Length: 368
Ligand code: ATP
Image 1 (cartoon, rainbow, N blue to C red):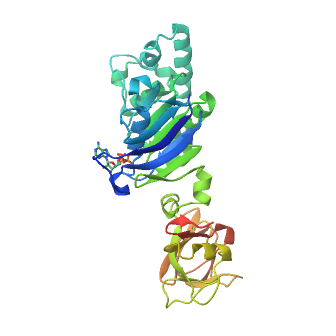
Image 2: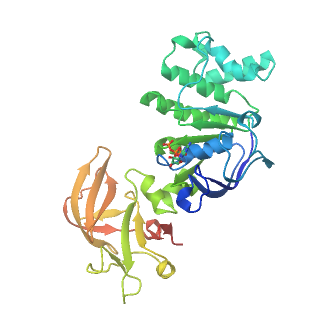
């Protein structure tokens, strides 16, 4: 397995790119550690597949370099990069049985047969395929075939990395859940370097140690699932991660009232929100301001609490194991995720913004 470095990497499919919008992948420099499980996450068209294809050698980048363990592989074709790939749809040999399909990448590299049997046995056990090893692949369901594809990706120990491009798309939702957890377990047991492309945040957050969130061709944040949840560095991270995403409220610094913020335009009453004075000062003249707080951290009550801001609670929905309150403040809608036994009702209400959970963004970037 290898450490992967992306050095000033950028890609444009059209000729002569000039402005940022011309790039499918905007210039990025980052290092992915040997043995890490990385998820490339983002909405359709943000550049995930382009980045994966540059790492695998299917696409030559317009600029920058890809290094595996310090060795420049930018110009090398896929075959010379020593990587395994698992695609959205199964790639297996129907004429072979499950064992021989799993053994194929190893036999292809002339690995001794005793090692082939050991490795196939290990991967089959991890993927719960042991009972199927003698079955012919042609008669198997699409789910099973994709499991075998995953196994073929995981069976080699000598690869620089294993690249997955939305491999669970065709899998039945129940099995998807199982396979996701399995992959995480396999990663820990076999210490593989995995790069996993998905547009599904649940998939990324359950599987990866590090999530690389992309938006419009750029990496907006790379970090642990917890960091992306608790400390979104860009408003897009707040919006995209979480269900529902972060409450994002356009706001301004209140004129003539130091330390106060106005939500919902100059005509609304300025409110004292717990944004540190130095953050407000740093945010000045840095572009449009947005206040962000996750629904999980926003307090919502019918009675006033110290530091709470008056608002209107529009509705409270009981969603089984939690309640979701929808409130308005200065014409903006906010959501608060409350415990299932919360006694909050629609009507006059108060919103509490815990200081350490309330983030300020200037021109979409967090102010620190
Ligand atoms: P999806 O999840 O839909 O596959 P993605 O995040 O993987 O999306 P890419 O497929 O990398 O995104 O596409 C990034 C951008 O590059 C998009 O605007 C896409 O239209 C464009 N693009 C991708 N492949 C090509 C190509 N071969 N030629 C021209 N433009 C392309």
